[in-house]
Length: 78
Image 1 (tube, rainbow, N blue to C red):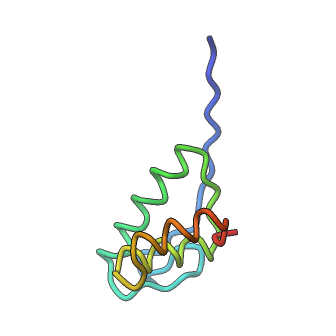
Image 2 (cartoon, one colour):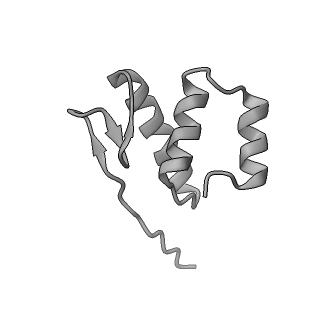
Image 3 (cartoon, one colour):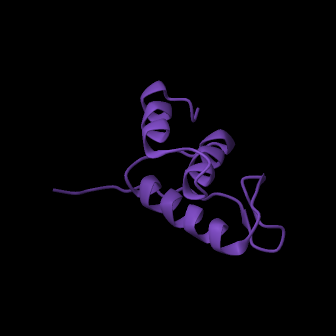
């Protein structure tokens, strides 16, 4: 059966260290966040700046896994 996968793009600025306008402190965190976003987008996730912030904060240890799960359940990333 045919499968259609729609790809969307997001703005990643490696010079300014931003994704969708969300600032990052270093390139490694930006790249890790971009990888996480890409994986989730492949599964249908539509990122927003707030969602980028939540994933960045999880990757940097600002929020815990349980907080990340709670945000996802609340759809706080919208």
